[in-house]
Image (cartoon, rainbow, N blue to C red; front, top):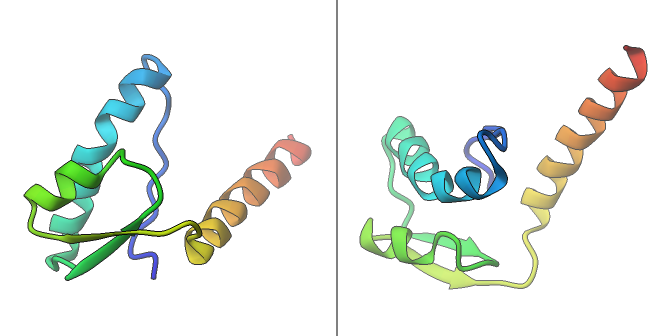
Length: 84
């Protein structure tokens, strides 16, 4: 289940954006006022942060709902660019 969708801009650069991801995820969890008992991940970008926050982490190869959400955002972006 995707509980939130935020888009991060690679500003001032891509590295800074990646470094901000753990904090942004924790902020989203706080907004939801709910700590999931388990979060599935497919990269190590969030593993340490989530474990420190008390969330069980499960490694998976696929995140179908996340991929659908990302595909939808990309599709909407492409449509808006086509209209411009």
